Image (tube, rainbow, N blue to C red; front, side, top):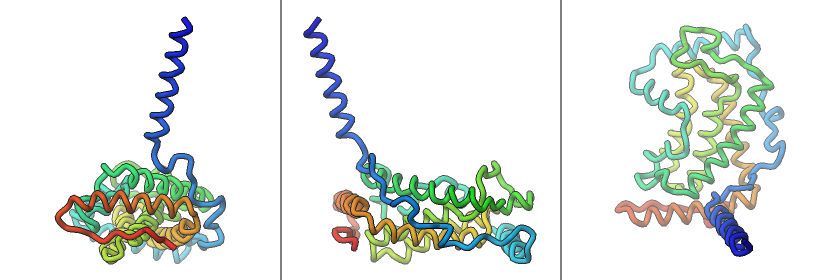
Length: 245
């Protein structure tokens, strides 16, 4: 009986140790301090409902949506729930989801961005263009408010971090990050002002992330993982993050 109990405790201990060793590098880590950045101080309110500004905003959405081309439309739909590896075309074929530290690191960032964007959306409660004009609606209706755009916010944060890692890929990364927001206008899901607000918020979030020692330490781990993955490819890419000051 006692030997069975000791064996059970030993097995439990081994299981817990394995769980700890397998935990993602971001477990229990928070990069952003509470209230930082302060989106309410940073962003102006969106154009009031029915105002000339909102009418002009909606006219742009209609124009972009109605002049869209099939390829851009399909790409925009595919980006509905994107992760960091959507940037692979700008970085290289080695940038794939089989990089556990990279995946966990950017998932943590995505989660923190989601919290900030959602809080602001629920404060401003701005209906989306497709809520105002049903002719813009394609597919399932979004269940959240529009301002600021989470896609634009996260696309900007991710792009700025990746540019830190791959400075020579700056133009391609930045272009892709911008498109993640703008494609939401193509789909009638966001106004241009939603996108611009998201980009401003994203830049502020990035600069707050740089104040976190945990963020900088984990970014260095991600850089090492990417260098190792890149070393097995025929085309080498410069990867920097030993210093992120």
